[in-house]
Image (cartoon, rainbow, N blue to C red; front, side, top):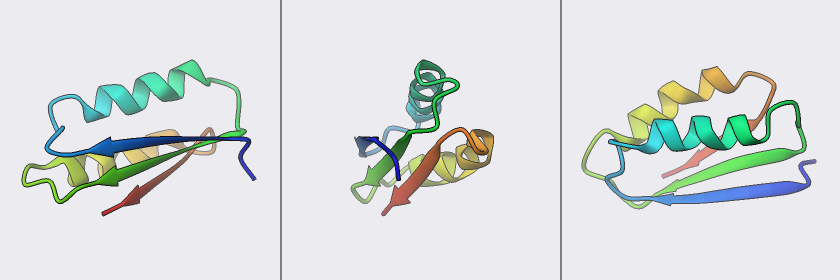
Length: 68
């Protein structure tokens, strides 16, 4: 169970969501005791698809969840 949950609220943030997720991952590099929960508020751009494509990059280092 993660010790830290990082919750990111998004709406039409496709221009920067990937960089944000990668930055958070890099800050916690080597620490598996955290999770990232991305909550999308019905974006009309491709925010959700970008988050979905970013998820495999996290591998075992972080638990990235998307709530639509």
